[in-house]
Length: 346
Ligand code: 13P
Image 1: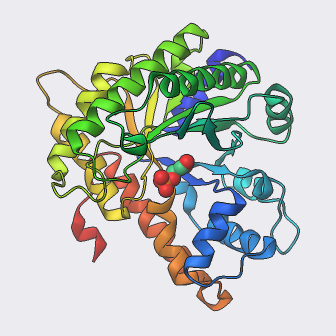
Image 2: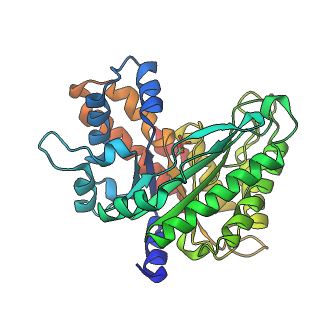
């Protein structure tokens, strides 16, 4: 695949009014979400749930692509149709999570580095042959690990390097890399601290991507929004989140990057949409000029969670759950072009 085709795929991922549905939780994380609402934690239930999401009628109106976990990538609906084929027939791009998780960083036990580079070239080749068009790798950064004031240089560099290696391997294999450096919103850090850590992390990530000769036009950045820690007494307003996030991105993300698709990170669907929407409405006519990249979404929980609660493992709730997913996708789509209104929630 030429880099021209990869650029087209990257642009299709963040096409107007569209974004990604992240449903690539590992089995352990999916089971944890099931456990919270008393759904049996079995392979069959995970398959039912993922099949429900993917077969939602009209999903492709708002969702350009879906990120799958390896187990889902190989599963099929009750009538035997592979889930990958269901997506392809609906005109939805298929993505695959290829990291194998965040592990303790040597000599830095409170910090993590994401693993999965060994054998990655072969795995990417196989996924591409089976229909994947893009891949995802997530680095996880605690903004105040073990109570320290900031993440260590060792942690930032190790994670950035891995993202650079992964992204280069993806492009070589004909897949668009979704580069996800996530500063967690867990903890009581201030928004100002979150902004500082996010900007520093993004600078490390783009230095590493550039060092590995990654084609920036043929990748998507999946960052966190700049919020205060979940338990911080001073929460930022919607406008403050939008302003700090855009400031950070303007400083650290080259204009050549085709698209930015935010993770939701534990925000509710309505919060995540309000924040994304404000980035569009506040910067549409900014004196600094228009934003150089498409700003869209790649939400996991903010799209799935309300639907999961409605489904609760009951076949009878299937259609209601799909309606809720479609509603959340419609709201996220509206937010990605500055058309979201909280009145859509009632
Ligand atoms: P959340 O939107 O729930 O943060 O999930 C996005 C994701 O893909 C995490 O890797």
